[in-house]
Image (cartoon, rainbow, N blue to C red; front, top):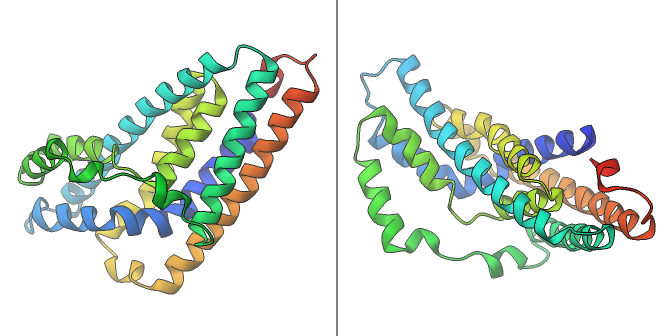
Length: 235
């Protein structure tokens, strides 16, 4: 992948984390912060527990990225097939961006109620009630599986790389870029309640998603119209 891809991915994830991610996962962060983090803990202990939670999410995202990258690799047996995959991914990204702007209900239609499953709720209750440090990490891994529009977007991006390693890197960058917002949420809850800040971040993220989707469509077009080039020339 090119440097522009990694920069775009990190930018979209960072902006989106202050808008979409805080809205989607903020309740969970506040819940475990008030339930699992003890008042007598030092700032260092609290920070370490938050970082373990984020590390758990990053591990899950990286595994998902590798899986989607591998799936994309199976589908890309030719430049034409790879181009079609990128075109489909680009269109899905455009729909995601428009959905984040509230123009369409694309994300609402594809999200499902995984969090309401008996398996998820049983494990969530068990981990939220535990005081061990490893439980923060496991809770992060568990919540990395929650249906989320941004997770879908980056999973699509991972699949478009057609490579398990690049797919894992895409999702890892996504996870790392969301750490600042979710990590600081427990310390500065009031800041994220300001709808103006969140709405601004959401709009910037949505626009970035649309621009990156357009760029992905352009790459897909190039794959199809320039069959002489190898797949490696695009990464």
